[in-house]
Image (cartoon, rainbow, N blue to C red; front, side, top):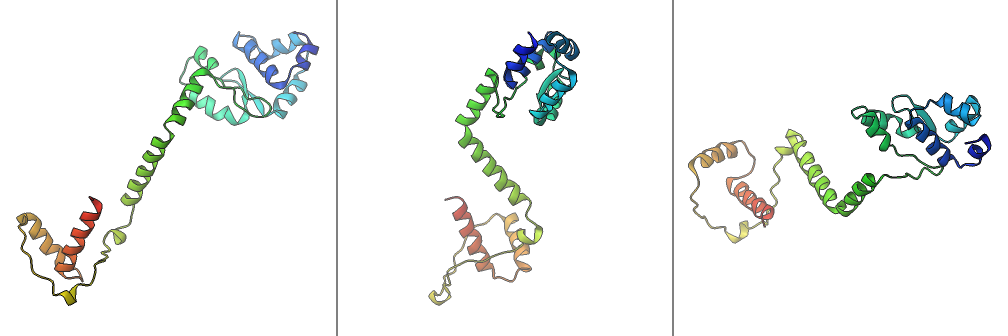
Length: 192
C-alpha cells in the first residue's frame, strides 16, 4: 500500500490494515517503512482517535479497551486473542464478531429473566444485611378486637417449639396473644 492510499483510508480502515499486518507477524516499524509514513505522524493520528498500541496483544486497540483486553486475553493463546479483538470506528460503534453478536442476542432475549434474578439477589442481600436491631424490632399490626371479646382457642404445638416460644415471649413487651396473632398473620401473608 502506498502512502497516498493509506492517507485516503478512513481511520477504521487504517486500524484494520495495521492490525492485519501486525497479525501476520510484521512490526509497526516495518509497516510504517513499507507505507512510507513517519513515526510521529502515525502516533498522533492513532492517539487523536482514541487508540493505542498494546504490546501484549501486538495490536492497536481503543484506549478504553486496553485494560479489559489485556486481562481477558492474557489467559488465551496469541492466535485466539487476535481473532477476538473488537475494533471501534471513529464514532466508537463496536464492530462485533459473530460470537459476540450471538452472546448479545442471548442477553437481549433473556433480559427479563436476568432482571428477575438481579431483583431476587438484591432482595436476599438486603434482607441478609439488615442490622440486628432491625431484625429484632417487632411490629404488631393487628385490628383492635378487644371490644369483641376474643375467644380462647386451643392448638396442639410441637413441644420443642412451645418451649422456645415461652422463652421468646418472656422478654417482649407484647402479650403472647398479640405475638401469636401477628406471627400467624405474617405467615399467611408470606405464603398466600
